[in-house]
Image (cartoon, rainbow, N blue to C red):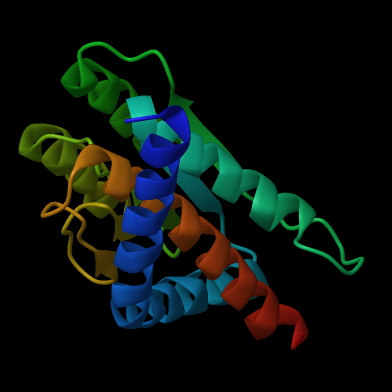
Length: 180
């Protein structure tokens, strides 16, 4: 099989999967975007949290929210909490949980990118958020409230879905805040 065939197959698989996931992405994205927009309007903090591979969509989401997608608009407040080089992931989740505990306040929102997180890591971050009254939204893992669970797909598809979800949520936040 040639390189073209490999890449073409990869594109087709991802396009098909993303198309089939549109309904799921829309529902979760709307809930998460609404919580983020409400937090920003209420002058609460928004966190974008990711570990390892999930640090990439968490960082992308941070930039999309902060800097915007297109038309000029004010910079929006968001805090990036990522651990790109985390090994093991459970140790990094303890560090991120400490950050959420020290920075979080009731009414803040944490968007947790968790497609690679273990159940232990998820519970560690969830416990910290709940302790501080921070609303948690989950992309890639099942959590309380708004979540987009990606646990049934392979790593490549979870990564694609996480990234397109970051873009979709950012776009909906702008619609909520600026009507564009």
